[in-house]
Image 1 (tube, helix red, strand yellow):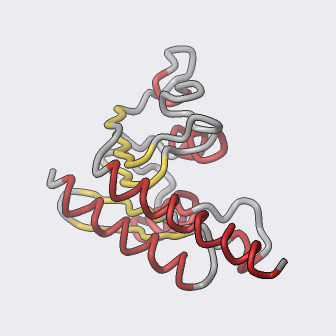
Image 2: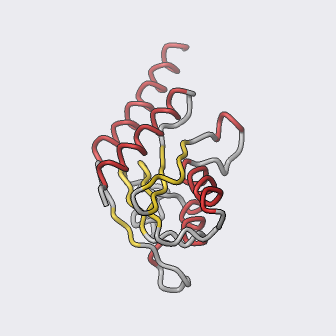
Length: 155
């Protein structure tokens, strides 16, 4: 797998989120050498708490395959998955998650806890953490820095 190539595609999705005023998180689902699902955050746009980048990409991938079972697939995401997304990853039977920036306050792929590799569940997912960490982390840091500056300017 070419992790750089697919993480760069996830970063493209993160920029799409940022372009519409969303937190810049992006994801792609890959099977073989083909992207079968793409997503970026749309929570604010649609006022739907489930529209995380991973959820959007997983739904698109399932539609693409005509199956909820995403075995032999990898998910690339710019931020460590939250509990909801980790649950969807397990339920979709995704084989591997490659993420960029860690999320110490909500990450469930190793930071706060590791739902993806808990042997008590019937499916475990391989986790590759910190891929292109600096670039992924800077997207988020820059977004929140600008958001705070805007709020400060408004008074």
